[in-house]
Length: 169
Image 1 (cartoon, one colour):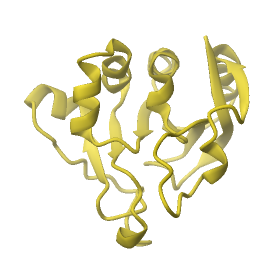
Image 2 (spheres, rainbow, N blue to C red):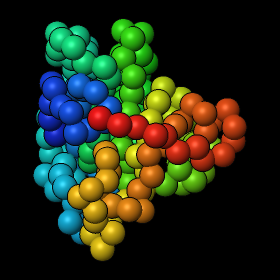
Image 3 (tube, rainbow, N blue to C red):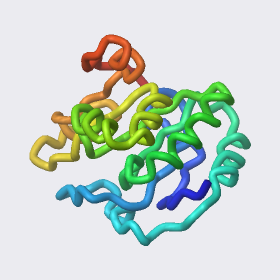
């Protein structure tokens, strides 16, 4: 399956817990003021890669704990990211997904789109909500503004309530 990506970082320690690879989705409808990745906003930018190409790059990276899907907006390509995420989970990697949508918006979107629920279903940790420049805080772990939450997705699904994750580097 094809994904339009802004890029891939093989090793990161700032985009989730532990050493991780990061796949940056290309395209985002939010246009947040102060966006950290403005080059990833244009849905026609970046490059198109096959999921197997991305999987190959990630699987050759040693010592990683997981993979982060960032953006742009991964949920614009929910089906492709869910499929890639499933294959990464089968390799024993955890998945962290960043989104400009809130948890509640994603659940509403998921009523119309099984792909959204599939991407949530393979996600271990979700950073939700748009970046808000007036809420920017450089002291927050794994998020850029105070309005964003780091959610333990699997517990939240089981308990049908937002359960915040307690993550450290």
